[in-house]
Length: 236
Image 1 (spheres, helix red, strand yellow):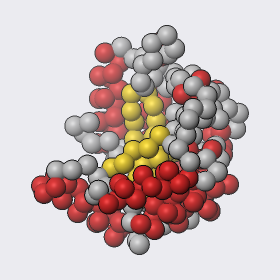
Image 2: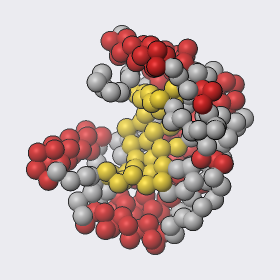
Image 3: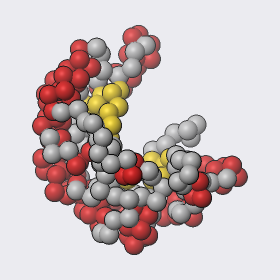
Image 4: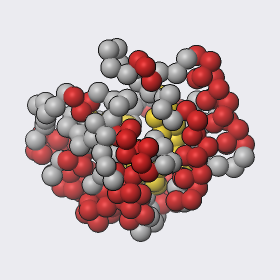
């Protein structure tokens, strides 16, 4: 299905949910808590491996979700690409009619995009700094910026996939919001921004003050007005 037809179907689904069924359509699934990064602003990598659903359990959940009216499957973690069965899961979800979106740090994306690209509707790659060394430092993973960008370039071969960069805003990258928008523009993809989730006892030192939050919001509005590919809505 072409990107246009997928986007049209998504719009129809949203309108149907809003005005007719009043039921959720997005199934958000933290498929694993395992992660191959040690981000200074995120605590999930400290959780280690917890109990995970196996392939059959995930597929049953997806079938039940589809039968209940869900239309979109959003997979995240941890790092979902650490699941060796992810291609099988996405293939099954796509086959029964779900639109798949994967949220990834991009570390293993280049090697896996060939397996999963055909089953994706959306791809969200986490990038938090336009400088490769700085991004690697924030993520605690050498070379991840380069590999993530290579993965994005590989994903662009699949014309039907909507590709986004997602940037988590904190004190470590507050001054580089425009640089991130310029990076997205150079890669030919859109970008979304979100505020860092504050975890008590771990990352409070990176949290923005209320004034800094306002400054960041005004900066993002300016970037949208200047034509950068910022996908956040103005009201958001």
